Image 1 (spheres, rainbow, N blue to C red):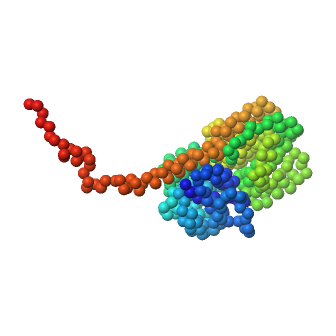
Image 2 (image 1 turned 90 degrees about the horizontal axis):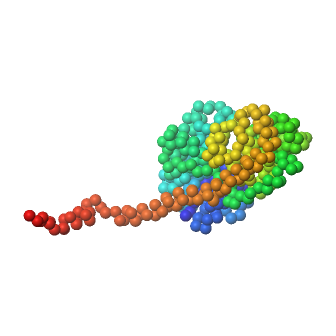
Length: 416
């Protein structure tokens, strides 16, 4: 089977590039698959990751993306075209972003089986966090383009509530819930003895500046230090593309603090070291844009989670049996109290670490990809049988076998 995966892809740092990498890596491991990545163009020469067939086709905020992608898809002649999408995948300006979202529909109309993994819905995005001015227009556009995306052959979403919304509100067909999954095939049980000995490492990880901000976390951490003097905060990750310079401006204010450290953007191979000694991970968000990749990363390393009480995250924790301590969104005192109580309770930390690790084992990347591929394979086999079915179909004017039998059968005369 030949698959075209349309996604942002490293070394790009745009939305979902990391998730696109892990999808591609898992697909590449299957010898029965041929995978071509149609990725976003980068400034200057790009040294592609070894072992991946990458074609840099589309550009962020370009009006020509649908035409470029369709041309590349025709050259590839795939069995499946798989889109890894946010509403902002193709741009952060309204018109190029909207035009880019027409690509899945145009791909299907061109005769290719089209699947979308849609990571969020417009209904669940807090537009205030994104600094959107004309919110009613955005909501209307989101409604229209959600319906256009549902014209793909099939759509996967990462929370059951999203599937219910697409089926009930939009009357969507062939919509699947598939878990986000952890970004690993074989997670290793963490060495819990490394945690809390010299310091209690509190980790915050993400792309900062929009709905993920650091002010509340840093305010609350001053109160944590008073009760847990060996607590240390590690802020990992860089700026959200919409807020350049945000992390640097915050880090400058805390440059002399012995309790707070900023790592900046982390490469893939640096992430294990960050989580290996982490006592807890904090998600100080004001809203959600879908299932959290950061939460699943914490589960992969068996790290307890503290999170703002946001409905999407509550549902994610309940559906996937994650160990998460929730605090009232926007309340720094509640965040500090939750962090202190957890860091002072070694037994609870261990229970949460084990629960999250075992949740991770139930949703490794091979298990998640197997569900996708089973669906693609079923379609592929069905398509292969269609020419045979057309050939074997008996025209309507030919009498059926049962009719011929009845016509030729003798008429038995009952005994009188």
